[in-house]
Image (cartoon, rainbow, N blue to C red; front, side):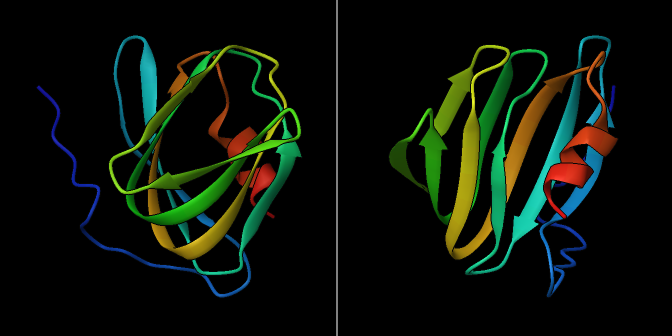
Length: 112
């Protein structure tokens, strides 16, 4: 059994989204992304399918040029290689589920 908290030890960064691994399972990595209002993650692609859950806040989630406004509790699933971007409208806590074969450093590089 593994336990983690998405709301403990929240350390927002002023200059970029904060990315940290909450826990790893046999098939996934559960990643927390903390974004302050106005921060963004420019368009990028994931090499494997992903699931994004907005735990708190409000973001514009762009998928192939189309914007979806995600609010608290919303989930979105994307297949591999789908272009997407994020723009934070209200301070946000985001849970990202990625494959264990994917790299958290890749996510961190998108956040810079």
